[in-house]
Image 1 (cartoon, rainbow, N blue to C red):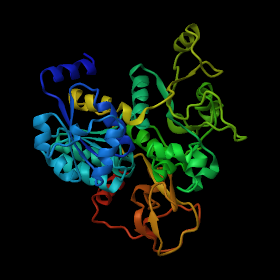
Image 2 (image 1 turned 90 degrees about the vertical axis):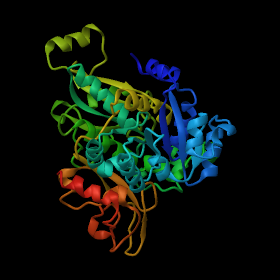
Image 3 (image 1 turned 60 degrees about the vertical axis):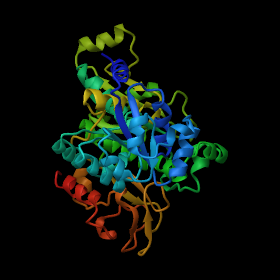
Image 4 (image 1 turned 135 degrees about the vertical axis):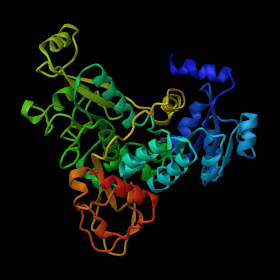
Length: 444
C-alpha cells in the first residue's frame, strides 16, 4: 500500500502523524506550504525564535492566520490548528508531538534538538544536513539506542541520491558513482554574502521576494553545501570521497556516464565507488545545456555482457563502452518534498537516508588570510568555506569541521586556502555537537 493511501486512512481514523517543526525559514516554510495538503499529517507546533516572522512566512505560504493562533500545543492538539512559539525544547518534549522536523540550519543547535527529541522518544527528520556532516553517525547511534529514527530529509539532495543508490543496488547494479549537480567555477570558493546574488543569477528583487538568506545561498555557491551534502551521501551509502576533495567535472546529463568512470577506463574518478559533483559550467565559463545543476544522479555499471546487451537492446543512453548508465532526477524541490520523509518515518518506520558510518568529512578552509583574534562566522560567511575530505585524512590532521566554525575565536593566523585545525581555534568541549564529533572521530 502506498504512503498516500496509508496517510488517507490515518486521516479517516483521526490518527494523524503529529509533527513539530523547528525553524520556519526557507526549508521549513516550503514544507509547511505543502503540509496543508497532506492528509494524515497534523503540524501541531512550529518553533522559531522569531515568532512574528514565522507566522508571516506561513501566511505567505498559504496558511490562514486563524490556523496559527492556538494559544498552546494542547490547544492545537484539541482544535487541529497549530501553535507557533519560540520554545523549541518545550515543543520537542511535548507528548503530543511524534516527529520533530529540524530545519534551523545551525548544526550545534540541531544536535541539541536531536538529542532532546531522542530523550523524549521522538523521531527526528533533519534538514540541517550540516549536523549530519559533523556527527551524523553518532546521532544515528544515539537514535538507535533510544529506539527512534534519525533521518535525512527527502527533498534535500542527499536523501534523494541515497534513494537512487538504493534503487541501483536493489536492482543488482554495481554503483560507480553518485552525487549531485552544481553551478561551479573555482573562484566561487571565495564568494561572500556580498557577491552571492550576482554569481547565483538572482536579482536582489527576486531574493527579497523569496525571502532568501544570502549567507545560506552563499554556502551553496562557495562549495560548502555541495561538500556537506556529498559527505552525507558518502556516509549513508559507503561511497568514498575523493582524496583531494570534489573536482566538479563539467558536463551535461548525457556526459555523466562517461565522466563517472575510473580514470583507467577514461573517466575522472580515482577509483570506482565515489561521490562527486557535476558542474554546469563548461571550461570556457559558458552554461552547459541540459545540465544537472539542480538535480541528483547515480551511475551504474553493467557487470555482464548480458546486461550490457540489454542496455543496447532497450536503447539505453550509455557511455561509449556501453557499460555505464546514468539514472537521474534533474530537479529537487527541497522542502516541498519533505512529506515523503514524514510518511516514511511515521508509517513505515524507515529513514529516508541515514549515516551508517563516518567515512567522509567537511573541513574548514580559509577564504582569505585570517588573523588571530578574529571570530569565524560559519557556513556561507566571509571567513571559511567547506571542502570534502575522507576521514582517514581529516581526522589524523585534526582538521576543523566546517560545522563548528560559527562564532568561534581564532588563536593564530591562518593563510588563505589553508585547512584550519582544532589548534587554530578555541573549541568549547562542553557542546553536545563537539562531544558527538569526538565519538565520530573515535570511529575512524
